[in-house]
Image 1 (cartoon, helix red, strand yellow):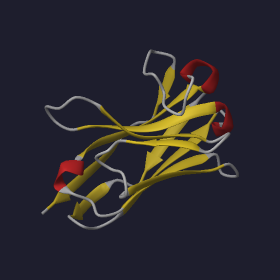
Image 2 (tube, helix red, strand yellow):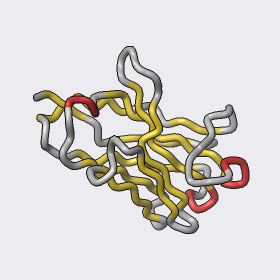
Image 3 (cartoon, rainbow, N blue to C red):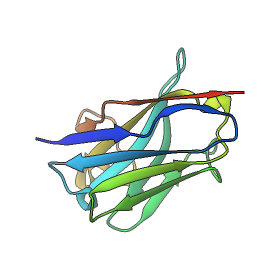
Image 4 (cartoon, one colour):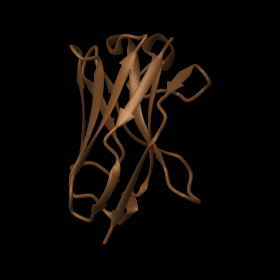
Length: 127
């Protein structure tokens, strides 16, 4: 059974940092495109950052470039999202999503139903 277990969300003041973790079991992250997506109340889901652990290819949304860093640790089968300089507009529910590389075709899952989701982590940034 595939499980993606997220941790690391919370309530922080603007300018502070957080690190999200996505611990995978039942799959090997090297074989998957894994991404962090977020959804704020009343807004569309946004693709934040993705990684192909097999070759290190990454993607970042313009809104987070220079502030967020995605990484993976093959030994622990975990993907991380380090976030610095958090802004109130980063407030959202963050989801770790994985799709097999052979289906994704790139570092980001396609969200076409062939993917696995974490339970979500709430991040609230206040000014």
